[in-house]
Structure formats: C-alpha cells, structure tokens
Length: 293
Image (cartoon, rainbow, N blue to C red; front, side, top):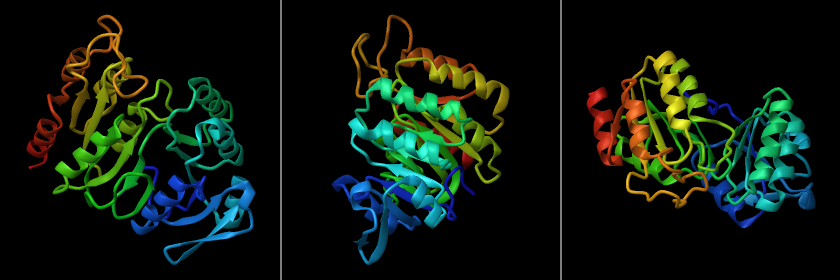
C-alpha cells in the first residue's frame, strides 16, 4: 500500500519540455510512473517522444485533466512563474501538486498555499523545494531515485532530499511503502504531521522514519501529534547538531534563533514521546532495523 501516490495515479508535468522537466520525466517514466501529459501553453497541441513514449503537451492543467484523467501534477516551472502554475493547478482541482522548484519567493508560496486553503484543500501541495514522493514499485512523482530501494514496510517523511535517499538506501532490505520529501522552505504545503497521520492510517506501513532539521518548531509539533495519535513505532533524525546559531544551513528554514529550534531541543521533544532519535543517519537506520528485526 502507499499514501497519496499509487500505481493508479495519472501524472502530468508542468514544465515538462524544459531541461529539468524533460530529464526527470524520463526518469519517472523509466521507474514505472504513469505520465499522461505535459503542460506548456507555448507548445500546446504537440507531443514529445520520451524514450519511445509519445507524451502529449497541453496548454493548461484543466485541459490536461479533462483529456487524460490526471490527478497528480509535478511542477518544474521556474521560480518566477511557479506561483501562477500552482494556482492554475489548484483552480483546476487536481488532487496532488508536487512542487519541485526551489528558490520560490516566500510570499509567492504563501499566496498559493493560502489559495489552496481558500478553495477547501482540494489540492494537496507537497513542497516547494522538495524531491517529491515515491511509492516504490508503484509510482514516482518528482526526483527521488527509483533504484535505491523497493516496496516494503517503512514510511518515510523528510525535510531533506539527500537524507531521504540515504535512509531509503540504508533500509533497502526492508523497503518502503512511500517516501515523502516535504521540503525545507519556511512555508510548505504538506507537513510532518500530515504524513504521520497518513502513515498511521495505512495498513501496510508498519513503522515510520521522520527526518527533521534545525529551525522552527515543526518537529516539536510533530512530537505532540505522535504522543496523541500515532501508535506505530517512529524513529527520528534531526539534521544540524553542529550548526551555529543565527546561520542558515542549507534550507531557507534551517536557522537557529537563540535557544529555539536546536537539534538537541527537537531530539529531546521527540524522545519524550517515545521516538528513538539517531545522532547520525546510519545510527537512525540501525534503530529502525532493530525495531523491525
């Protein structure tokens, strides 16, 4: 089983004909994802040969959905135009929008997230600045490598793309139901809590890996949610144990302010509700292996 993305998901790619969009469309198709179209107003009515697959290009998301039944969009649109692209997807009523683009102005993210809320959360947004979501053996929407693990028993939610890949590889002997990279920007659409709730409800997810990082209080809020709502075992890792206060580390949201948002504080909050937290990614994988063995 999987969360949000299954073998039946029909995916379109906004920005498919750009260099990044085309590169990752090839990778998604090669991994078995059902890519049914791309969106580019300037190339509407054409089609693209992607390694032998003839993929049509539509002028708008609504048009693509009507023609193909698409329920997922992956957004590779440049930052300056990304807000319009996501708003278009929301207005079309697509179920899931995976926003890969990094460097989107925070006020643009705030605007399209507010628009999603105002329309009743009909569109789930993952990202921005994220690697996307993969349900190994079923589908892949984003840039997560499909050959590092197979289908299995673990659910993973992570702020970090690179750490997503590392934990998937280190736990490849168990495999994953779904892995979700939620992104590390100050404003994101899908949170740790959203993924934890979905994995808790998924009957084939037996345990959960949660990867956080310094900055903000998302991990502390996730700890409170776990305490009251999650019965499955959770193992955690917090990136940034050696980060200096006041300095942004990688992600725009990864910054310690005073004594708030430190890795130690987040580790303590998670351990207080029974989550085992590794000091390194490898130690985190070992903790999960011990739980499942």
